[in-house]
Length: 490
Image 1 (cartoon, rainbow, N blue to C red):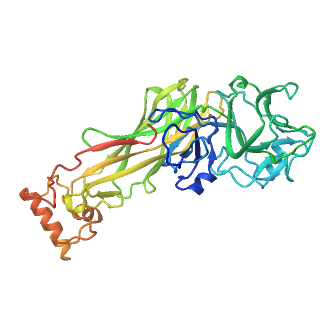
Image 2: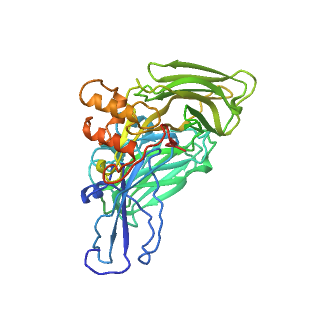
């Protein structure tokens, strides 16, 4: 707390949202995690689980601690994590009249704009509406009413989970909100949870309903009952979702070969069922016109498939289809199904500079020479996957990657070493005699001041003579000296 005493905290208040929680007002507006462990001895490592998060979404988390009399600590730092992709079987955010078609709402259940789950809840960035048992104020006495979903199928589902956001003020021990599920049209209901008392901040709830996988008709409901006296604000429910594991994921792996003249882009597929067809698109942001698509091929996983590729060289993109024609299928598993090769241009003298980057050394431009490199990102899109009977397979993660090619600062003729010719070319450009290309300007601007002048000429001379450059020292090295693979999903 904030009373200046030391010792073990009494409780935690953990909040989360889809934007950074940087002050007390943002903390108060964020969703509140429940079911956290009690604080242990200071310095101990603790862990907790936050349920009901959006799939494939970045979340920010922040924490406050409270002492035994309710004094709260200052706000912690805001940390970020990302959830995985899932398959959505049923969802409702209560935002439009279309939500009415997803439920049977007993009176007095209705949609309301009096309260709604904040951004970061289980629905797609929340909104302004929720469902409530008391749309006109406090709930009534003697209520026995349900909000019941339409039937949805979990026939092909795996590891299904039922989630929702809610808040409530219900007479403790006398009035109750029940969460139920059925697979027989409502003949019998199984209770998942019961709520009574007070939870004023919006929070998420999550229930494993994997026992209902493979069922063709499943329903959930929110059942509210009250006694004959004392009423409160009631129960608000928002962003309801039933999700299950995805069937497949795809990503790109990008690397340079040992001689740094060919980029290999591999299409990787992880699937849990046999696959008869895949279509995909690859786009690369090559502002320097550095790469040219050279060839493509299949891997052992897709032997017997026909691979059709349509290249759009001007648009730096291609579309491709793999179709089973030889009687074989892509078996369940993980690995590459296709490879694409891109040739790195031998002659860089007329290459554009849009994909080139120059980064100052740790001590700033005065400390030495910058690091100069090309970086070309690749993205994967237009994905469709078919199983063996011609039904679509849900694709989850679709990660891209990028290729990075190091260049040599001050080597404006790309010979692999800084010499007198580079210094003369830099000098000629500085006085307006012979202009350099856009990429050569990036290479020649060794001080990163966006102009070529005598400082860059002196630095070139110092490289040749092995003298100190700036407050540190930097020596020349070969062009394309290093490469690295980057994949934001591997």
